[in-house]
Image (cartoon, rainbow, N blue to C red; front, side):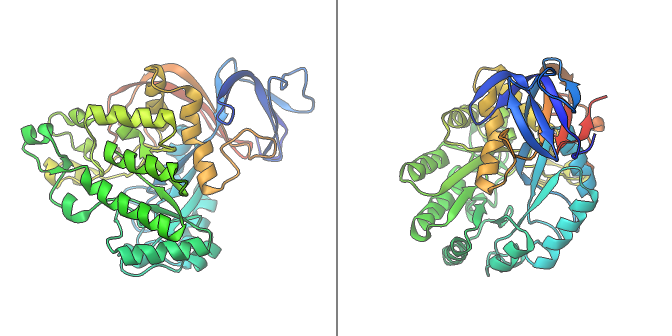
Amino acid sequence: MTGNMRLALINAQIVDPASHKIVKGGVLAEGGNIEASGAEVTAANVSGAEIMDCRGLHLAPGLIDMRAFIGEPGASHRETIATISAAAAAGGVTTLLATPETSPPADGSATVDYITRRARDNAKVRINVCAALTKGLSGAEIAEIGLLRQAGAIAFSNGSQSVVSSQVMRRAMTYARDFDALVMHYAEDRDLARAGVMNEGEFAARLGLAGIPHEAEAIVLDRDIRLVALTGARYHAELVTNSLSLDIIRKAKAAGLPVTCGTSINHLTLNENDIGDYRTFLKMSPPLRSESERVGLVEALADGTIDVIVSDHNPQDVETKRVPFPEAAYGAIGVETLLAAGLRLVSAGDITLPRLIAAMSLHPADILRLPQGRLNKGAPADLVIFDPDEPFVVDPLHLHSRSKNTPFDEARLQGRVKHTFVGGSAIWAAA
């Protein structure tokens, strides 16, 4: 199938994140865009189209992952554009926002252009660039935001390094506001977090590991929100993982500030106890929190405080993970298991399926000002067909990422992606 063909996907359970409804019907696509969707799209009502019977499976907009390490340039031993796009397609993710933590960092037009061209030539899915907020991701001097936007960057972040200087952050927000650019920030006080390797608390003490307090995240987030109020910049907190941070976000939204936030699928579905006997694949930054904090994050997702769920896809090779816990690298892969892990929350009755899909498609699209992530007429025909009830056991060897550091190794999940489309073209079909 190609995007230029007229394609009718019929007999599906359509998950519409905009209306928060699930209805039986279909989607008609032509020229790479959606022509119609809903109950009226049936085999009897379309003509001149290739018809695909979804046989009652669920159909939704393709997922949009706002935080993914793509590996190129500079770290192709961990991931490549080809491997991450294959993993994304298999997981129903049709758009990735690449973090600026490449080598060299995405702080210049040449690097942004390189990633864009490599993605065009090697990716099955759409890859957009989140450029560096500061030169070299050093936090010392702001990057050329205007030139980077002209080169194609759609957001600006300092990767996994917080901007320490409030003055630099204020300047970055001011320039970003003038270019109507989105500032994304990973909030962490380096001094408070530096000695820690997991969530501070009783469990860390029992394991004999240094902890990272909640305040390490909340202090920087609170500063950022005050700078948003000062500058008026659009701001997205990349990873919010505890109740202190949620309180800050709630107050900011109540005050009408242009603030959104996300959290990772890991923090929504796992907790610090899963680390068990020093499982380094679950060493993450921010660290996995307590079960009570995880529940609070899920409740914040359900009530709309948390806007976005990301995979926080961070591939690491074996040499950096098969070491003692304090020495292990942070990060886990997650783009391919993003949807299936999220369906755990639906199965548990914590959130509805439309709410989950909205946090993985519509809301990221709205924040990034992208046309996809919805089923409206004229939107790109980026779609995923999945069976939310099909169980499987995660086998790292069968995942498409170049690295295999999944926190869900041998986990029992349910929810299989059957087909993925980008611009009306089939890019993935389950065997």
